[in-house]
Image (cartoon, rainbow, N blue to C red; front, side, top):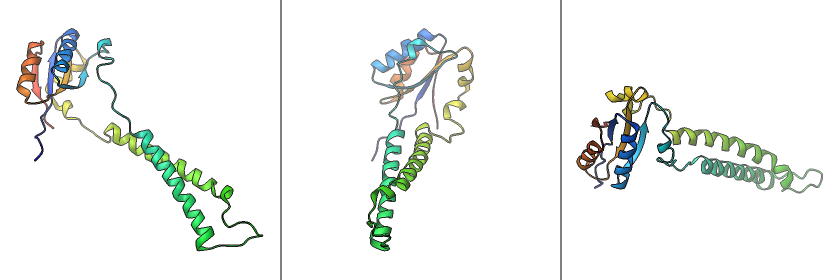
Length: 175
């Protein structure tokens, strides 16, 4: 039986200093900050959320090389095994002729896989995020600073910690 998933907490702060202080406190306690929403960029947050691993390059390489190898194999099979044609004494397996189609098909497959992986990595197409339904989110672009945090255990200690750090309102995010 898996552990129940805990809903993240969204904390609202009046000043950027309070948000940065709370971010340091919850990270020090072992909680995982997910995102911060501010009306303007904060220099203190520039390195606070490291980017996630990007699967796009790996997906493109695997799809491109795999599709190229499959196309080469298909050409080899059709020319050497399935329907060998002796045309002017040329060898049946003429690899220089077989490289054009695998290259082009590999590029096409890599582009399609890269686009699909980019959509998947970005969580698209997603028309609405649960944080947008929170009433305090409207003020994040005006005069409030919001911090979204995933608790490591029960959310009650994290809620108290955020309130001690100066949160005006702490609410649980429901999906």
